[in-house]
Length: 65
Image (tube, rainbow, N blue to C red; front, side, top):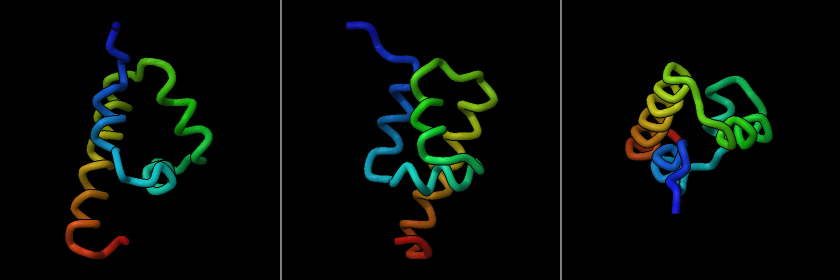
């Protein structure tokens, strides 16, 4: 089975509401779902990975539930 381009993002964002990621990107949740369908450009991929890391830290520190 072929690995999907954005499989790492989907794995990293497990248990993080897509709504939070979409808000930080400044887009709607539906637009975020559509973003993950196609392979992302390197810059956008890195931006999403960074945002996921920030949200995980905020959850860990208790600033976001």
